[in-house]
Length: 240
Image (cartoon, rainbow, N blue to C red; front, top):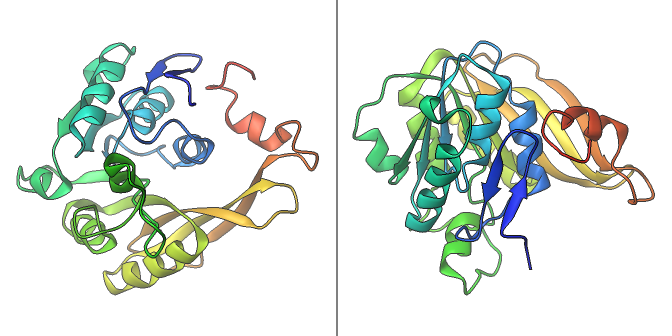
């Protein structure tokens, strides 16, 4: 059973009411997204509020909107944000992305998303977990995410997305039709020498050759984190 909370160095994530708990992939996404020039960020499907809080810690000038459809998860995210040092810079909205779009928000410098991504696998009997992990008619679709990005991402803004390799390939094709192209690609491996398990890709409107890199979470023996992973998460993980 997953812990009811995850303690970071500067904030705590309570997660008992969330279908999707804190995971390593999301922590890497939160630590690697390029936020250096961003002043307005939208965390789409915030869940526990993890990515919003990591962004607030990394960039003291950024103001963050966080959207979450699930009522229990949104309430938990709000509690986590309220208990953090950055509560005045993060607003949690309990609504769908389509509902949020109807509020006519100002353009964002950066959109960050760990979207539902299992398009063809067996759906979980847990409805909340299904909403968080599987694309379906009642969840956030790739088309909806790209359409929102087209309208509400600033001209020089960035969209950063975490997906498994097959789903990222599909998403890149769809994003290109919307005028968005990879600028940074990070291939995530469970351990040194293993297959790619996730892609973290940043999209912009400029069709340039993307910068590519890879990261292994564990060393070959899987008994210890890799030095690169430890360096990346040093500002967040208590163990480092």
